[in-house]
Length: 244
Length: 350
Image 1 (cartoon, rainbow over the protein chains, first blue to last red):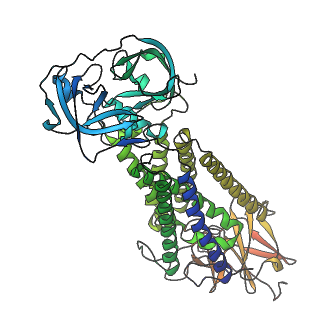
Image 2 (image 1 turned 90 degrees about the vertical axis):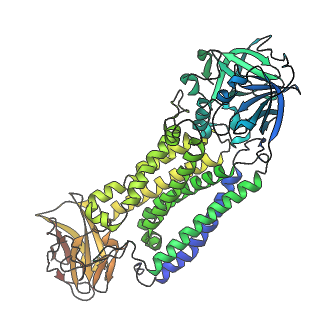
Image 3 (image 1 turned 90 degrees about the horizontal axis):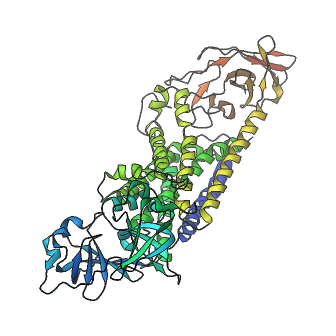
């Protein structure tokens, strides 16, 4: 019978042999396991949140249904604040005016968003005529889409990954804070598109829809455009778990 | 063993153990983050806080499996005793890994918003679907149990909670393990497409279950419960008890008795160490005292008391012999009660 191992006495030879095998094996196993699991993580997607140097954009500001800038270059850029807060408060009084905004760009699959700088220097009312380029939901089309409701800011690069169940609590918090709810889905050509989601005409989602954020959902609604931004409108009952 | 409480009673083995555990933890985190950064370069990178949080989470999961495997492994093969000796420190280290994982999750996912970060993370959403169950709650429940365990891991609590309640409290680790599995299944497994994690979780759950079952079966086959005749239970021939070791028998009331042979004398004590419930019958006589295989607590065979200046006492049992066969009395003596034992001749014959 082997000797008894007692922690405060000299380790018996049989136990030392096991230690000499087990400890290195565990260390190597730990490192390999870490590497394999880290390597198996899914790609969060190519999204960029460029906080290195601020940029400026000029165009017409609208705040209904969500703060956005219709730029002179023809882009429709959603606007968010730093942190998990929407830009409604600061920009409400500027709605309809031609402004120059300063902030950091977020970009995913060619679609951009502006994270507004803090302080008054973030926006300047600019001379010139505000363009007409606001065509909210003209030529709406009935659609039935399958996708995931994401909070636009995280998904466009502020959090990586910014989708899926692991990010659900954050996404709900972000949308509650006024960040734009967007639907991650594919168009008929298979390309990813991210329409702004409006439920009962508002980007403030009701609780029953918030519960479905970051999960596969099916949405029956109407698709329209504001500039080059897709807008998906529906009522709360038309957002359902997918598959049913 | 101590006569006064100390934060940690360091010895060389504990220092080496802790260095190895800390080193393995560091290796795991560094390897995870390094591979995560290398395989997912910008602009498709995983955010560093999320990468570190995941590294800590996976590390905690692996550590928990190691911690839970050590017990049954040691029951199956005593050579794993060095892993068991300082398992408490491993448990406390594991708790801090979990805590850091939770801090990053609460700060990063729950922070910077319009709600209290903790409320945002734990009460931010309800469940419309089965897969939508807030997995964070499972993790928080497990963390609360791990906190209870880590904060009561010191011998002060073992003694003051009484070993029975302390053991019961620390058995909650299995509830916490189930919560952790649910945390993973309803969390990361809902998003990650790789089959690696579900496979690892499945192997881990099945492996731990198999180890515990094997250890339980072996324990029962070693010392099945025996009925008493006239208040005495048969142990077997004295010659079959190895020198300096014990034979363990089960009683009908669920207690186990360690029947020890020390030189020419056979005596019996409880099989349960009052420190952390270690199996005294799997220990040995060292320097004239029965020594627990878990943490080296020692007891005199004659009366079940620890050698001075220590003050622990354990129940003893009366023994007798009949035609070379040892019998033990089914009723335990009060802790610290001296017993006569029976004397056998050299070679085991009575």
